[in-house]
Image (tube, helix red, strand yellow):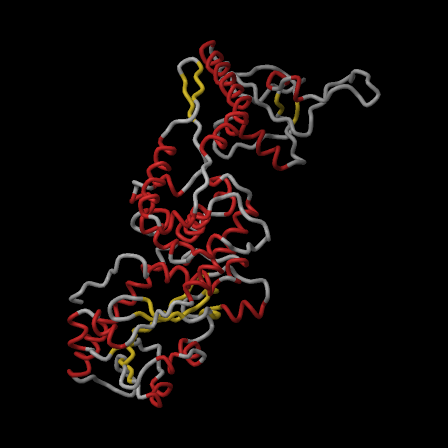
Length: 464
């Protein structure tokens, strides 16, 4: 006697047994029939009748071209025709047909329209005029804004409308300071152009990593690089955003990171002692007048390397993961004045400073403010440079009132470097694990992110 179909509301007899040899299909069949019982499992006699399959679920003719004597299901067939699946109404079918027609019109016209837009909207800019001629810079910015706001050709079909615009560009944010700040960290479009101009005319004559000049303009290449640092978008997402290939994104990012690190690294960020004293906050001058730099270490997460030696070198016991470590130094006024190279997370702060030239950069009589992790008094004693460091509690059962007050003063002033490091880590590339390509550029990436902080509004108040 044939077994009745196990599908609810179906009373047909006979059918196909559950494919227990294929666990994936077996589970899919169980979910499809919707028995409703908790922890229901089909018995060895359970079947699903042919009413729940269509002709496409069955194998066609034999290899010799003859009709099969017995219908056999394909190895991928899953029951999908059930009484609870209502057939689409006429209105739904009509909407689907109209949607299909609209997509077809767009696909046929997109290529021709994009070629027209590129011809009409691509206007070359003279870099020299853009940098030095303020009047022509304002005019070109206005023209770029007009081009951005001018709608492209419009396709209309039964009340629907579609507007196609050119590729993503920095000129979209000429009058949108919140937008430019979101993507770059810089407050305005004018500051974006100013930071680009600090790189000099060499930015327009770069030797690219892949040896091929990109199709993007120089401001947009700089814009793409800042977005990569700020949002840590994948190369795929950036390629779709800027309408370029993924290899072009890599070509631009690697070239510009090395270029910016080199160009800004040639600037003397280490001011004279008198300059530091002049721009120090008033309370800092009164309590620590000889402070030249405030030092602190920070770590950037990296993906676990495959090489066991690299795993050991980059593993940080403090963060309990693989990291790259740098030492950051700021002036009392909040200027990033010192950045070490990046080392593996297992390197101590003292080891990094032993390999630096900070001892020769300080003048006799200067002082350095550090945390307890920097036990470096002996490194600077020969240079007559003092170290402001909190008191150690080792071999002591209590601390004097004077030591407590001194430690509080140091902590209240040293907190500013924590804020500067936090500002640098608003560039999300420093808080997301670096991949192997980014790890090879870790020194350049970290330096560029903190150099960019020097172009942003100072977060240390004048009376701090």
